[in-house]
Length: 437
Figure 1 (cartoon, helix red, strand yellow):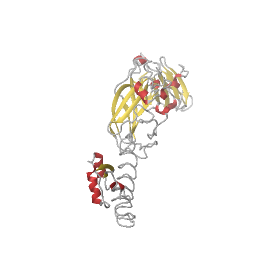
Figure 2 (tube, one colour; figure 1 turned 45 degrees about the vertical axis):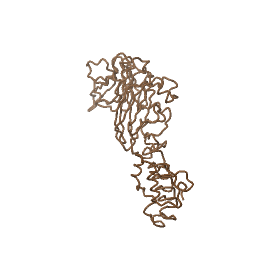
Figure 3 (cartoon, helix red, strand yellow; figure 1 turned 90 degrees about the horizontal axis):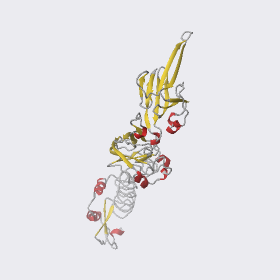
């Protein structure tokens, strides 16, 4: 006889949807019938919404070892030793304690804690934070049934947590770009556009996403102790710049841009790091706000302003055309382009032999710009800090496919330029950085 229904029990226990609730004591002189157990269940407590959900799943038994005998020893008994009790204490118990429990604790739980959660913490999220990581540190074993949002720290980011401190505070998915790079007063009047890349690793899209953008001088590369800050210290120092709503398709990414620009007002006031927090308002909330190590909804780039992008892109340069690396604008030679930085010149000469054509091509710095050819170096590895240490000159340079050259622009910024194609026209890729404040 089950102990919780026996004569010595101080209070009966009703069973509903995998929960226990106390009822008045009930003394029985014999083992209860299934009808009696059901009667106790019905009186135990008023069902909650979660109880209703669980009851709707009764019978979805995942093809385990109850009902329809599965070829075992006797009808509806699964190879055990009495009718409808499966070696346990009461009806449909599969060798455990109560209804449909596979020999363990309660309904549809596969021997663990509660409904449809496979031994973890709650429905569909498996660890309580709606980030879809199933409570493990290696990310989800497969796509989750909710959005799984994160700000990726690399190309193959699986959403694992925690992540190393250096990775958490230097996340290049968080960016700061200058919207008015040609302004003559520099950091006094620069306006900064903050943005970040958001990924959804779940099988459900994010329809109600919200991003929060902050800056702070304590979580910046100018603060020697920036890597050791607690979440509370970061929160206390964070200055809110603005918000942005967003949507992300399942398995996709999106670039989110803050609705407000940030105007530091001076070079000293610009020495701040950038922090972004993202979440789905209904299905995927943050668990540890302002903690970029332990919550993947949060990301910091403490050196974003030290490598602020002025302009970037890819362009086909025409012969005898000027190019402004700050504004990203091409103009014909002789046009009004006082901010132009480089001029590409291609000259062909017919030689003495048949079909003998000699050609000469070079890149010439313009106005107060200066230049240096770095040769075949890794373009992506060059940082704003690297570009500031180079020895620039006004002498024209000659290059070929795959070469990288650097330019100190007319406005005092620093550009890296990759020669993508070298022929009758020149295709280049460039990124121009503002000097650190």
